[in-house]
Image (cartoon, rainbow, N blue to C red; front, side, top):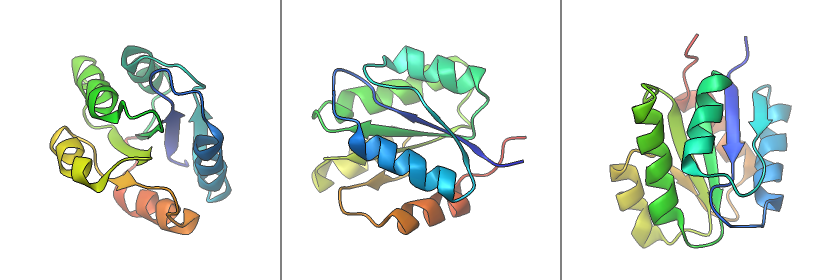
Length: 131
């Protein structure tokens, strides 16, 4: 059974081309991908992750709200007893913010220009199946 990955856009960021590119690359690499669409709250993302029984959540932010929204998704997953879901992020995120996001529970951060095969290989190696 392929691992299930939710790709989500938290907050008011209206730019989702990158998220769709990542979703397609993961799908083409053999993962089952769910894209939640734009303008999702952290609670909506966590609820979708639990309802869809995903193995990981990939968050995308280009708006600068990643320091607030990404940790809130991790907290919402924990509140639903779903801390075993791997959370990774991507977008326009300054390197200075990486450690704070890792400390908040994200597994890794990808930035613009990261090769798609690097992302799919990371997911293959770091996202265990929860089934």
